[in-house]
Image 1 (cartoon, rainbow, N blue to C red):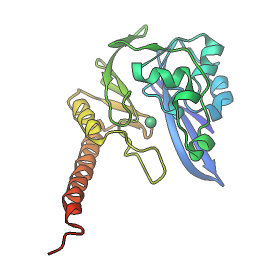
Image 2: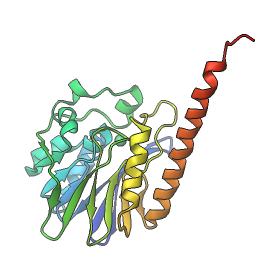
Image 3: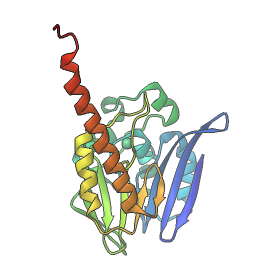
Length: 237
Ligand SMILES: [Zn+2]
C-alpha cells in the first residue's frame, strides 16, 4: 500500500506492507523540489509510477543501497529519464542488485528484488531549483549511508540513520560504533525537522537524536560488559 502525505514543500511516500490487516513494515521516501530521496520497494512499483505521474521529478538520490530504498530506481528512471546519485559504495548494488545484494526470504517477500539501474557517485552537495543540500556521510546502519542536510530550512533527510534496527531476523546494523559517531555528528546540526525513512516526519529532532545516542551508548556498554564476562566462563579455581 502506498500513501502520500504533504508536509509543506515535502511530499512523503509511505510504503506499507500489511498481512491479515496488520502492519508488518513501513518505509518512507520523500520528494522535495523535484528531488526524490529514495524510491521505495519494487513490490509497489506500479503504485509508485502512478503517483509520480502527477508530480514533478527531476533527480533521485539514494540514502543507501538497501532494497527498500532503491527498489523503484529502475522503473522510475525508465519512465521519467532521471539521473540517480548515491554513495560510491552503494553503486554496485544499484547497478547490479542480483550480484551484489543478499536478501533474506522475508526481504524478498516484503520488498522484492530491485532491478538494474544506472547511477553515478554523489558529490558533496545536491542542488534543486530552490534548495541546496549538503551530503553528509553517516555510516553505521550501512557503510554507504548518507544524509541530506538543507541548512536554510533546517531539514535533515536521514534515511535509516535513526532506526534502531534489528528485531531478530531483520537487517542487522552494519557497525554500531560508526552509527553512534554519525548520530553525534548530526546532533550538532541546526535542525527544525527530520524526514526519517522509518518514522516519517520528526518534529522534535534533537530529542529523537539524543534518545538514539543514549540507546546505542547503552547497547555498546552492555556488549562490552558481556565481553568482559565471557573469558571467566570455564575458568577452574
Ligand atoms: Zn536500510
